[in-house]
Amino acid sequence: MIKIEKKPFGYRLIFSGVISTKEVEAWLAESDNLFEKNNGSFSVLVDMRDMELLPVACQGIMRQGQKLYKRMGMDRSAVVVRDKLTAMQFRLIAQKTGIYSEERYINAALNLNWEKEALGWILHSVEPSTEKEPVE
Image 1 (spheres, helix red, strand yellow):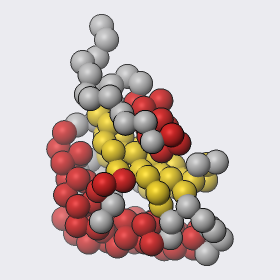
Image 2 (tube, rainbow, N blue to C red):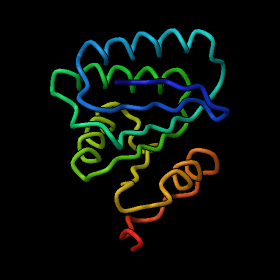
Image 3 (tube, one colour):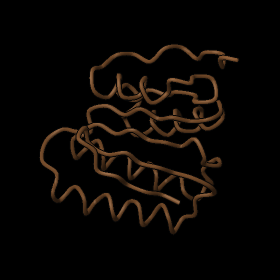
């Protein structure tokens, strides 16, 4: 499932479960329609805590989407994941699309303050903390 929510800072994207090519294509089309109404810069909080690794067939469409977001004014993005593999996958995609320097990755399994850290980055350019061990 992919969901887009409009927020004061820009957009919150929620990716969960196993994402299909059809879903990523629909996200790209919906994003393109949103940007017809968007003027100026914005930030994105991407919640991937419940997403499985992105299938290879979807990665090209994801790259198109990241390029679209950048072209339409995305300043910063924070990507919240639950594991290192998902972070690694999206770091590689971001490096290919030119958004890597504006994107930060937060492992929610190791950082209980993931939302505060993500908002700190996208709203105030405050670098997220390094990964932390969960508090017992």
